[in-house]
Image (cartoon, rainbow, N blue to C red):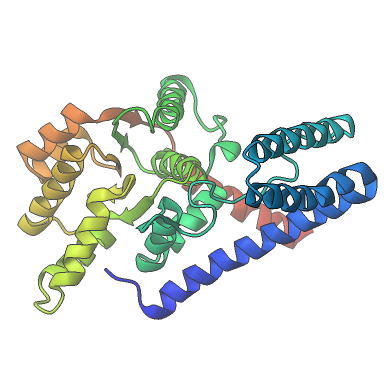
Length: 330
């Protein structure tokens, strides 16, 4: 699926805004240092004159001028670092800084789109407001084990540990997760925790509800005019750093869904791209609803995290309702 010109321009403007913002911050830092350290300003000002003087010597045939220039610039750089350190500033305080050091906030590395650009594309193309809302409220900082007891608590803590490990090893090894179990026990929550951490690391993450994913695939597959759109969509979901399929089993399951699910899981496995699936189905129901080869692919290549316990979402809604009733009475 290709960006419209308006969408592309929106992303490019966001990079221009980042660049301008960081330039303003750097100028503010420089003005602060100049005001506090007059010698630093004098050193900065003198560099231009030194370069011009040595350039003239080079033009006059003085071959030693270049070495002398390098030595002089190195001495001044060392003195500037010393001044910053003495004033309590880090040595890179006046170096350019970027939201994305990989592309230096241009969106491109050479002629290729940077991963940060790709994530903005994904967000625009697939209307991922759902994942943005999810990671705002569901992340490791808001995680609580107070809703679980006994074996349910052990399972949840094990799933949390596996989730942390998944994030820690994401760039080093290929791994997949299946969160399965009863309704409202934290499966989508943990998916959101992982998504937030990986997005903060610059990874491209695509989130779909199962019904949304297969509805989109059906729409493009059965529209003869959408071949290029289908190709680009599949390219994105096959190559994204992480794909999250939430609530597998809530879609209308048929032969089309089964074949598309296997293609997605198989292609991502061949590319060694991570996938997370959450479902209220148990393992037997997954095998019966889909196919033996899908069941085999999941059980062979995924860490299986079973979650059980009370429906936490329902509990929170009831608690919120009681609080509103109490407030009304007061």
